[in-house]
Image (cartoon, rainbow, N blue to C red; front, top):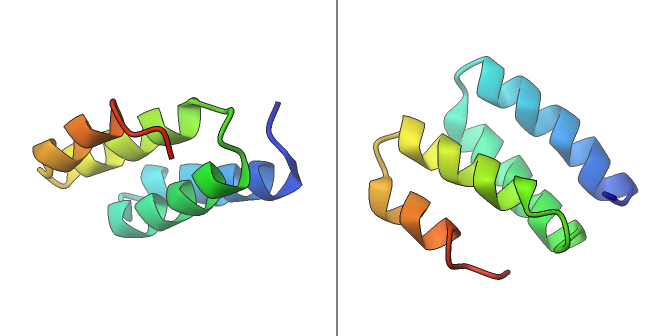
Length: 67
């Protein structure tokens, strides 16, 4: 379960992702990853944001990055 910082960032990142603000979403996902390394959805969602920006290599790195 996400800690308070991770949970707060998740709300911000999801709003940014829905608004199409992918660079901002990536920043929030990064903060959430460092706040809660046990919640794998942060890195998966960050990979999705990278894909939306056409940054396929960065998205692939997210699948092997452990924090």
